[in-house]
Length: 328
Image 1: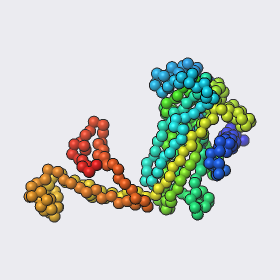
Image 2 (image 1 turned 30 degrees about the vertical axis):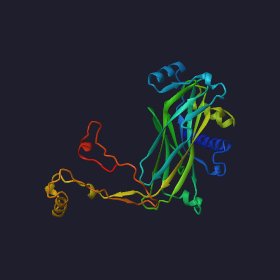
Image 3 (image 1 turned 180 degrees about the vertical axis):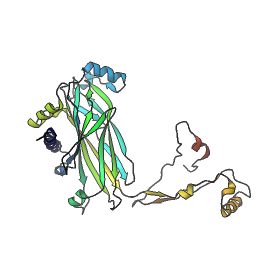
Image 4 (image 1 turned 120 degrees about the horizontal axis):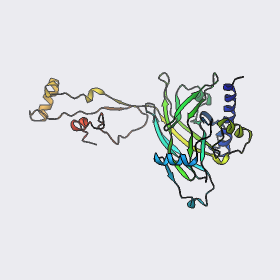
């Protein structure tokens, strides 16, 4: 066999461990057996990390860390947690771009902890009349990923036919004792619709599972073996961030012809010049109005709450100078 195959065997064991944790924590207890790990991110963890004091100094210099008052934590058991404690991506349309939510990791222990693995588990909530096979065979894809701020992420090879993704983090995520690490990760979601198939409404739920350790000198493979061999190993260093999202098929359709503005009154069509002069008592207008035509292709009523004029750059106010939306 090869080292790669050994790692994949251990990854499958880790997925079993993740499923066990989900069941024990009673996440979606009525249907938790359908929750499965779709991707995982493992620490490089090949060598011991720098000292806690060095890490604290560097994080404090970068303003990425906030200290907590340990005196206010006397009644709380040591743990790691996150802020926010759960994520609601809201309604995602079939034409939406990705949504990003930054996450803080909080270390309530009196010693530093290192993040060893982050798993993404997903369950599809089925509407009445939708079969499990219909969802498995869907070509549409709701995707949730973890971005690590300031760190590269490397894709690991997988076995043929395995739809689970594995990644390695290029660097360590370490939180000093009684500290909040500001936004070391960002959870992002997006929906990739298939152009050949109809998109049906769907609700998705899942969890981000963060695994950590208080041993800064252990390698990832040593930590993984301990976790697989001992059922309760490191359970106090595990936290979970539930997430949810809803897919609403449809889009807004805007006619681009309705927002084409002439550079001069003479460039208007003869009919429009006549209508404009009639409205302005034969005076040449200084401004030109356009009515924006929007078609709602969603299956539900939609309310437009805001329309903004976007400039092309930070120091460029050309659009705001020449264009406006008076009704908003």
